[in-house]
Image 1 (cartoon, rainbow, N blue to C red):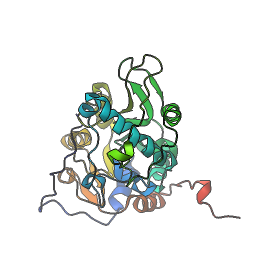
Image 2: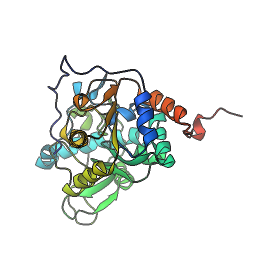
Image 3: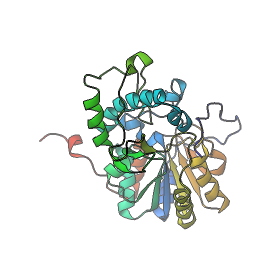
Image 4: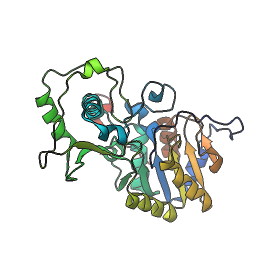
Length: 303
């Protein structure tokens, strides 16, 4: 279960120190069979903030819980107003070097699978296939009554039509796509129902306090069992949804490596934590392995 954000966890003084040497990642990938588990930290270089890293949004933002969302109209109005605005930022986000490096490792056949805790879809945009979206994706919407799925872009169009002129300035956008707006800015934002049955619409993501579907969890556990090792990229592992797979790998004596600037809840279970920026680190790792990381056309020099 993905619980309400854990604000009280702080690293112990005797946690093993991180290293600035990416060589262990090179060795792990060279051996192949690596299962990647990614978190919000891999998307920060795409302009999507982390929850708990430096400047993390939990200092000013508590994500919507499933219980709050289903409790009443006002909570849903507040959520959809903020999420509708935040969706514009998510829609403009593009994969960074970290996402593209992971996709390149997959094409080279070095990975056994990819599980992401993120809901931004950037791994797929970068070219990774067979991505397990542990917490779902913001680009889909589900009806809580008839369970029909529909594209987020369709809902965005309907919300634009129902709320002409809605364009407040947000204080920031969070990893769950929720923009920081005051109640005055939310105002009387109009929420639209399911077009099929008139039911309540919800993004197809796992809110805090909501359970990850058991079949998805079991699929991830199977991926851990079949992998040779586990590489964690940009996750603090504060909540159980990702930490349980690190525990599973460690209990099976599979090597675990973590690349994250800050200490994580899984550091004691890992061979080491590489305390370096993800994009730069994965780019350097790819170079050492002779893996070409594709550069998007927009990043190429003119001429």
